[in-house]
Each structure stands twice: as structure tokens, then as C-alpha cells.
Image (cartoon, rainbow, N blue to C red):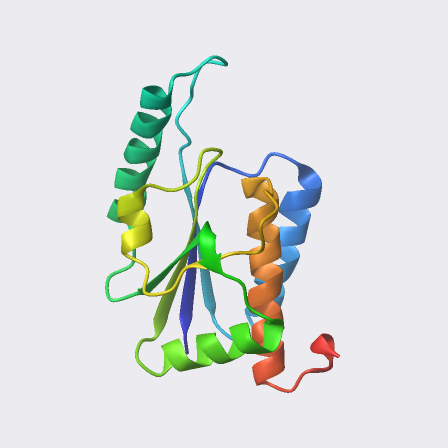
Length: 159
């Protein structure tokens, strides 16, 4: 059975996001072992310099790297990542799972991911050019992973 980990900077605050994520995690239990790891987000003052932002991203990146599962295929979510149609995303997960039993998706905080974390990814994923709140991104990712496994297993969900 494949293991999927989502490492996300920040915690879910809104109940509707908690409920939505919990629902997809429950559904994913039919197909895989799921683990979500929350990394503390750096607190920055409302007026911040570029140097402070870079420092915060670097500190979050260090915490992310420490929590990456060993021998896992790392897939950072970032604006420069590739956009996939759902069937193609499903095929990507299938291809990756031929070489490893562990996939780790990484969602950055408000300011994104460090270049070091991005470099660890054999693939980079984007949900488009629009900016999404990182908390909402987590739910969208879980839904798309569920959809990918539904496609692979010929479930009616994708129809």
C-alpha cells in the first residue's frame, strides 16, 4: 500500500476546511496510508522586509526538510510547478508509485517555499496561476489525490 504524506506550513483554522480535509482523508483510507504533518509558520510583523521574508521561508524550509519521510518522492506545490489534468495527475502518481511506496506533497506558508525544498522535488505541482490560501490548497490537494485514486480504481467519483 502506498503512503502519502502532506507536509503543510500552518494549521487549519476554519472549521469548514478542517471538515473538508477530514472527509477526504477518510475517503483516502480506502486506497492508501495518509499522514498530514503541520509545520509551524513563522510569525512576521505586518510591515516586513524582503530579508525577513526570505529568512522566514528558509526557517520553514529547514523544518520541512527535517520532517520529510525517508525515501519519499517529494512533490512541492509551487507557482512554477506543472499543471495537470486530473487523469494525468492520476497517471503521474501511478508512475511514481512504481519506484517508491511513499509520496510527500509539500505546501508552503503565506510566502511560499524555500528554493531548497523546491529543489528536492522530482516533480513540482501547481494548481494554476491564481494564488490560493495555503489552507485551502491543502483541501484541494487532498481532493485531487482522492480523485486520482478514484480514476486509477475506476470509481464513479471522477465521472
